[in-house]
Length: 240
Ligand SMILES: NC(=O)c1ccc[n+]([C@@H]2O[C@H](COP(=O)([O-])OP(=O)(O)OC[C@H]3O[C@@H](n4cnc5c(N)ncnc54)[C@H](OP(=O)(O)O)[C@@H]3O)[C@@H](O)[C@H]2O)c1
Image (tube, rainbow, N blue to C red; front, side, top):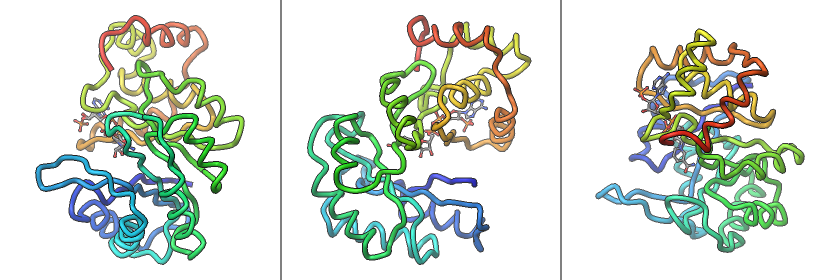
């Protein structure tokens, strides 16, 4: 099963329209995963959009622009702090999303930008199939959460897997890549795959060459001796 992470809140539905144009009719082994809960204003600032009516509107917009009768997975992007998880109750928006699920608009629900407490609260309201938070070789605040989700059979989808706006840079990563005959970004992706069986990758790129390189990382096996070197990067390294 392949999955594509999409979202309607980066622009006026352009992303979803492009996905529809490129990929429909959709193959059976493709799951489109979208995300709602935030909007950008005309100055590109992030605004919460988690009222029941806003969520319903976002789901309808995704359905329409992707050309689907039902959305496979919808992530609720929690917005107490736009830059990272912050505590606060998610009962109201998640109950509203679960109602849309009961109405047959979406099959599964995920959470994004959440704390472990919010995942626990979410699971008391409805089934949660995936969590999408920031995580990579150097940004490892979710280590315990990833292990807990793996035990529960819940997927973990790290966003900014390559460092996002500040792509990963580390001499240890570069040395490991040279040793393995791979690129640093391939090693960063292979490390995530090896980190836990519940991790799904969504690296972003605007380059076809990088896309091919990133896909080839699926075949990169990391030998045991390289793991402690890579694990130390989080404490030693320069940026993430
Ligand atoms: N849930 C959330 O709140 C949230 C927040 C942020 C992002 N996301 C999602 O997370 C996903 C990934 O985010 P992202 O794309 O911003 O971050 P990312 O995947 O960590 O990094 C993308 C950056 O890495 C570069 N890159 C990619 N492949 C490379 C390669 N092989 N070699 C060298 N550089 C490479 C890209 O440049 P090039 O274009 O030049 O390749 C780009 O600058 C996206 O689907 C995004 O929508 C979710």
